[in-house]
Structures are given as C-alpha cells and as structure tokens.
Picture (cartoon, rainbow, N blue to C red):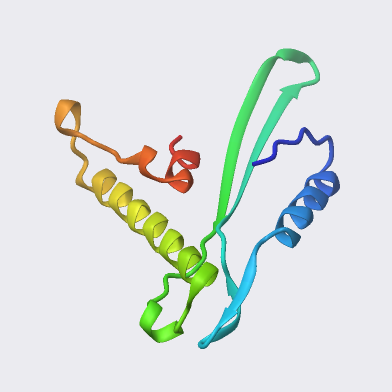
Length: 126
C-alpha cells in the first residue's frame, strides 16, 4: 500500500502506471495472463477557493480492478498459483458478504459488516 501527494493529474497518472506495472500476473491452464492480485486506486481531490482558502471541498474516487474468481479443478493450479487462487476467492467471498450486508440495510446492534475479514474490504470500508 502506497500513498502519494500529487500536484498534477499527470503526476497521479504516473503513480497509477507504476502501480499497474507492479500487479502480479501468472498463468494456468485457462489463462496465460491471469491477474493474481487486486488493484485499488483511491484518488482524493482537495480543492480550495482562491478568494476563500479556508473553504475546502474534498472528493474521493475509488477504482478497483478485481482479480477473477477461479475454480482450482478447472485451472489445474498447484503450489503458489493455487494458494493465490484460494486467497483471491476468499477476498471476493468476503466482498460479497459485505455487499449483501449493506444491501439488507439493517441498522443498530444487529448490523454486522465483515470489513475486517479481508484486506480488500478493510481498504474499501469508508
């Protein structure tokens, strides 16, 4: 996880390109360039008015490129690739649990959102 402060869009784009180039890719029976990791880009934009610098607006945009779910039997994955597939599938399962819990719209003590069950959902909590 990296955090950078940027002054221009082109500077932010360069950091994004670096992140994409660090994305882990592997191969298995069904896919020669299978994504082995999720990629999350969070952009926070702060803006203040020239005539009133104490007035600030803040916006956040989160883009997520999810690694795909895989069936070990179909891919015939072994070793490290199999462990990666298990980890990917687990994080996607937890993401689904969070989305379902949010969709139910429960509130109060009965509401449980399992954000802490995976690094991906912990990052997306806000």
